[in-house]
Length: 346
Image 1 (cartoon, rainbow, N blue to C red):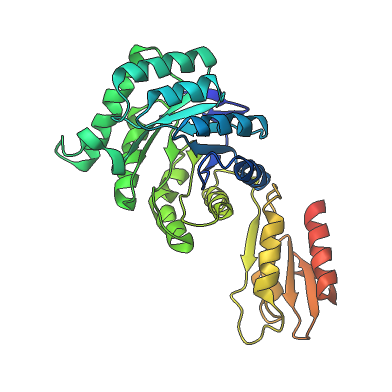
Image 2: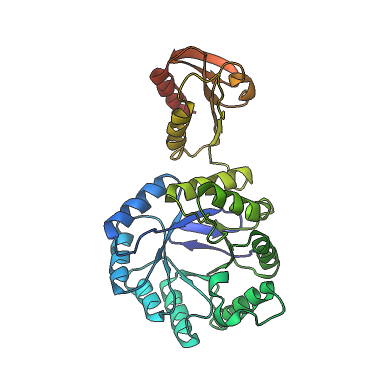
């Protein structure tokens, strides 16, 4: 069970703290302006930490500029080249390093640990099924392969007296993932980063991720989270927020109820619902909002919503309601503006 609490940049991770939401840059880190814009926009929607791949010195130079133009913790993802990890710490001044067991030699790893201690930054040991390398098949089961890789690497950190650690054991197999984290939670005192790696496109990836980690979250397991989707990064943030809300690990996330529509719907419900969703991306309060199709089920099915909007059966006339009681009927644009004002003032 996690016993450590510490800062990563301006965020705190650990016991009694909110689960922190992560994603990763989707272009080469040298695409500086694009990634500054992406990071800052995603932060407005709830991103807590941003990870970047580091492949060369050009990425280091870019990461330094990104760091100067953003204000959430930045993570450098390092493989093979220990010198790049040192540069990420000492030149780019990142807040955290992510390394993979087995692809950085022990001598380089000890230098990275010492530099991280001197600069007071965190390190994630990220065991990944795609890069188990020399550990694959070394034990009686895939589960034990993961823990062999983790334990051998962790021993080096503990020899160096380094405790500002986050651990992850990621795979694309949902059943295996749950086994790994259940066991890790029992035996390691460090914070855990959750995520099903290579989950896939939008809805399929979100469903697979939910199936693999919802029980972990409900049982208090996990300190940081990424939903790894082959999709727009805002969808990752939305998926993380939804998971944290339904697992009751965060209480500052809005809930959106949306009618699936039928022949009774006389307005562009899906279009309006997307507008409401985008509006709620930057709202951080426990409010429940409904977008409903018709007067048959509108206020009834969504009577527990703090605020909602529903079709009336009359073209371009929408009902705004609260807790199952009508507030008023308005033209569509006026109804939308009324709903947004109510949400802001909640």
